[in-house]
Structures are given as structure tokens and as C-alpha cells.
Length: 255
View 1 (cartoon, one colour):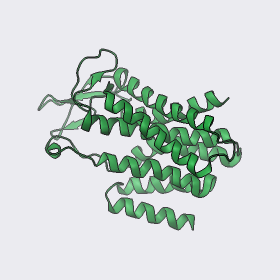
View 2: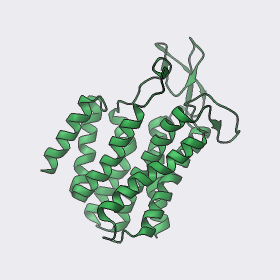
View 3: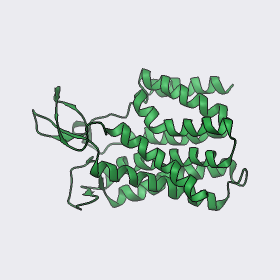
View 4: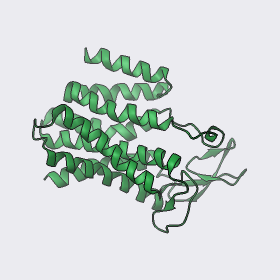
């Protein structure tokens, strides 16, 4: 039954163009591991991240379609970057069924949701963001830049996932209101790790045709030159560190 449910959800997501073919395969693996570990509650919590993040990634201001690339279709690398830590926590839970690993699972998805909501709502409602370290105004979508609407959305995204988890299993298996606060804070802090890495380490490329600096190596059908950051620290690496940090903060605070 769980397997059929996963297949149906992935089929709908693929139809909606939320997943590429490789992303669908990766999502099936992540969903299967989480279902084996946490059954329906795990899949609902995973769905809270995936559905909400996919929907907010489709949001655009009027007239923005011409200036902002729609890159919300997730590839396998993006699925594993956002859900790989959650699946790893689920695997450990299967062997060592302790609340700490369930908490790490939730916090990693809270961090991923926090990051996505911050980026998307900040882009739509935040105006020009400021660089985390220099506080200088930056173009929308710049890695390591923040805005007040984005920051509020980051906290809301983390709370959305942890609140969903609490509504499902709150009061059971050591999941108290204190745990809810800890996991929300952990996810929120994981998003700040993402932002800090974006400001300091994430690679950005300068297009040799139009001069735009972005995370995309290919622009104007031409490979850009590294403008800043480390070439091996791309968006997927940063997202993985974000979710890993959320899980790590949860384990640290709970211990």
C-alpha cells in the first residue's frame, strides 16, 4: 500500500513537472527508505516539505516570467541534496530505532523547507536583498543575500514541517512541545548555514556573453568562468550541508 502511494505521488509530481525523470527515480528511493522507517507519518512529513517547496517555487510576480528562470523541476542531484540526509537518518533509525534519528529526519527536512521558502518568498516580496557579510544591496537570487521577508519565511518554512510532524505524532515517542521548538530552531539554523556558505564558498560564474554572475555554469549557451567561490561547492553541495546542519543541530540540542 505504501509502495503504491509513493508511486502515485511521484507520478503526479512528474506530471506537474516538479520532477525530472532522474528526479522521480531519486524521489522513489528516498520515499521508499522513509516509508520503511517511519511509515505514513514519515511520508506525510516528507510531503510537507516536497509539496510546499514545489508550490512556492512556482510562485512569480506579474511580469517576472521574462526575467527569472523556472528551475523548480528537481533533478536526482537536487532530490538527494534536499532529501538524502533525511533518508540517511531513516536508514539509521531502521537499525537503531531511537527518537534522536526521527528528530534528525524532521530537522533536515525543516532546514530544506526553510531554505526554499526563504529564497522564493524573499525573491517575490523582499526587494533587493543584502549580502549577509557586507550588507550591500545585491540582485535578487544572489547566494548569501538576505531580506526580512525571506528571513520570516525561513522560520515559517521550518515551523511548517515541524508543526506538521507534531500534529501527526506529537506527544508520542518523546515528541514534546520542547522538541517542536528545538527542531524548528534546528531547521532555521540549518538555513543560515546555507546562507553563510552561499556568501563565502558557493561557486558563481560570470557569463562571457552577457556578463551576468549567477550559480549557473551555462548561460547564453556558453560556459561561464568562475567569478567567486570554490568550483566544487555548487548549489547541491550547499543544500546538502544545509540539511545535514539541521539534523546535526537537532542531535546536538537534544543530547
